[in-house]
Image (cartoon, rainbow, N blue to C red; front, side, top):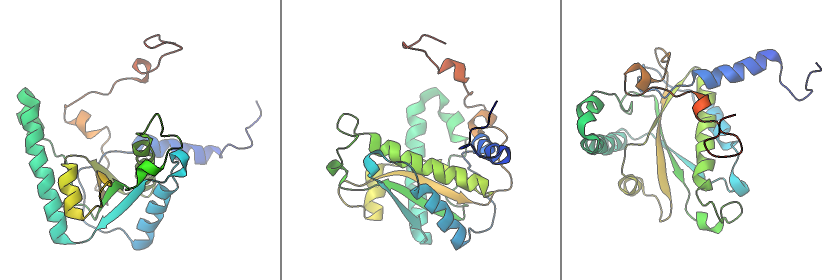
Length: 218
């Protein structure tokens, strides 16, 4: 069988698939820092993500103020308690989970959707949520690049968007989507942490794959 001339080498392909397979949503971070040139490289990888209509809706804020980081962590803690209350019988189990590493990570980034997104119609007239899909692609790029560089990253979504937006001075129409904890780790979880902690089980691809009609398996 002839080799696809556009394919990467076998070693390069293996590295791509390894980064995908070993990416983890990290909550435990070790001491250390992220060199400025490495952070710039990771953010550039995020910026190279695809976006619908080339709208590039992502905005990243680097949080360097220690007091501001503590305020953000307090917002997350408040939402953690509200989430536990909403979970009912699993409340105590949820409260035992470590849901963020804001106080320990080397870098804290806020990923947000820019204001003025309503001006972008291309690809969004019937699916306006494609701005969020585009930002998610940028976050995934950052995540995979971080894993390849040996850094852990965790996506924290436990916060009230309006409260965080006000704290960070976001303009009307902009929306915070993710708190990204980034930095060195002692080790990567062998499986997703929520599986390790017994919170949930992964489901196989076969359950997610249909052919021609919803629910019809190949």
